[in-house]
Image (cartoon, rainbow, N blue to C red; front, side, top):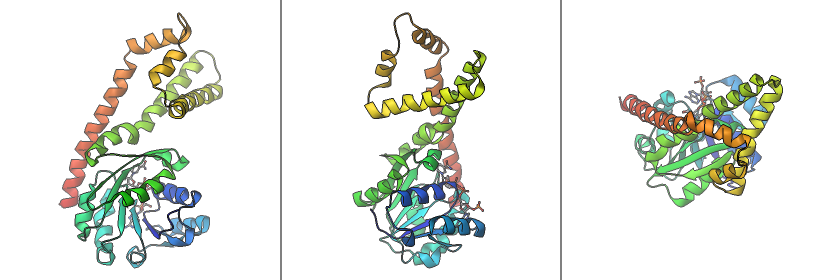
Length: 277
Ligand SMILES: NC(=O)c1ccc[n+]([C@@H]2O[C@H](COP(=O)([O-])OP(=O)(O)OC[C@H]3O[C@@H](n4cnc5c(N)ncnc54)[C@H](OP(=O)(O)O)[C@@H]3O)[C@@H](O)[C@H]2O)c1
């Protein structure tokens, strides 16, 4: 239980996922949460569904907030920071999930030495299965990280990293759901090619990926150990594993993470140029 007043700026996909997670985990009661968004219809929906406070203006709600969560797009960040700056107090924790914007940039633009924690979650936050990485800059303390871990722990798994690793996080878990969707789709097509009805193949492919991931997570065993346990000598699985090795599945996935990380660095340099420009 955090029991802190939260101001959530941006009630879109991620903002709504966080709101739902926070309430489901009973971290803070709805009456202590205010969501700010520019869409009146969206605000009305959130207010009705979650019984939180909702408004189109953030600044009036800043003074009573202990934690301010920024869940808006990078292009609206400067405008939002400039509107709330005057009302912000130095002890308030600011958490940002905005891709590509450094925590120190937000701290310095507010200009009051606030603790800022930057988080890279992923889309699975919408089903409470996110992989989120947290990073921050001084003066963020362990207590501030504990608050952020509680919030993002409500929608999945959390790790703490150095901020310069967030591009690699983006390349792995930020973009990763798309790689796995492609794998599920391909496994399903394989089943269809071999005569399975598509709905059956899709169910089997999805549950296979889910079950394999759950086994790695729940047992803590190395994936190679689990793979060895299901490869009978001269059996079907080792024949398929050989095929995957020959066609470079693992090298391909490693390259995908490297390429996405490099692209993230490139885009972040562009965002930084636009923010300061
Ligand atoms: N989606 C993901 O998987 C993911 C993963 C990691 C990080 N992120 C980051 O999370 C952030 C939010 O992403 P999202 O997918 O949730 O975006 P989104 O669905 O577009 O949500 C942002 C919301 O904020 C609203 N907004 C715009 N200007 C505002 C203002 N001045 N004050 C208050 N609200 C305002 C937007 O309205 P309009 O639609 O009118 O602009 C929209 O409703 C992004 O910075 C993104 O980089 C997203």
